[in-house]
Structures are given as structure tokens and as C-alpha cells.
Length: 202
Image (cartoon, rainbow, N blue to C red; front, side, top):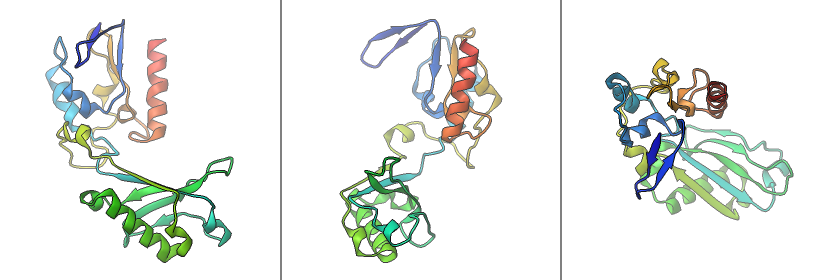
């Protein structure tokens, strides 16, 4: 099989395993063509993180722990809707990670940070005002949008039987987390899909 990149490079192999979200595979030109029913299925497989805004904050010290707070947060009121203590195992890096209200995608990163810090100061006190770093990622970016998702419900068509099959005479496979029949869309689903694929290839 031959995979040709946008810049004209050719990659040769006996088999191809696609580990990108299935709806992004609609941007690939296949030759020979995929079965029509499967080709129509691909854009309807929801990319689970699409629409999410993930954020992370880092601090010099875990000040919230000293005050007896776990760092876990669920909210229907502020910009942060879900948050967890993201301190590493070695306990030399401290911070939070979680998700922002998807409606905040229209704000700039600076405005999102301003609202995040305001919410944390209200909940945890003034020490929350001074993170060493702030990052966020709007997952509905140009890559997701280019797929023009046709989505009606969460996890739509994740784990679909057609995603378990091979194509092009057993030489093309799909193995993203959205293909997993259990925990599709999550890290567990990615592991399940990878194990399934390794068994098929071996």
C-alpha cells in the first residue's frame, strides 16, 4: 500500500492503521474507494473531545491542599465546569486541569484565563491569582471543523460494527478510540482499540 502526503511524499507499507478520529478520515482520498455505506458513516462518528475546551494551570505550591481542599470542582455557574488536582506523582509540579464551559470558545485565551482565575479566587482565595502558567485548548479547531460533523447525540456511532472491519482486502484498518466498543472516546477506549488492533496484526 502507498500513502501519499500533501507535500508529495510516499510512504509504503503492507498495512495501514488509521488512528485519527474517523470523521477526520473523510479528508483522505482513498483509492480504490471505500464502500459507499462506510464512507457515509465516517462523518457521523462523533469525535468525543470536539466541542470541549480543556485547560491547565500550574502553581509553585499546592496552596489549596494546605487549606484542606481536594482541588476537585464541578460547577454549573462559572466558566470552569469540571476540574481536578493535577499535581504530579513526584509532587514537584502543582496545578489543576479540567474543562471550561463550551460557550467560552468565543472568548480569547486571555479572557478565558481572566474568568478562570476569578472563579478560583472566589473559591480558593487570593493565592489562586498567581499561576506560573495557564494553557487552554479549544478542541473544535480547524481540524475538527474540516470534517463537518453530522452529530445528533454524544458518542454517536462510536464502536460501530463497520469500524471493526478491515478494508482494501484486509490492508486498511481504523483504530482510534472512537472505534472501541467499550469506553469509546476515552483513554480506556484508545487502549482497547490498540489491543484489538495489535491482536489482528499479530
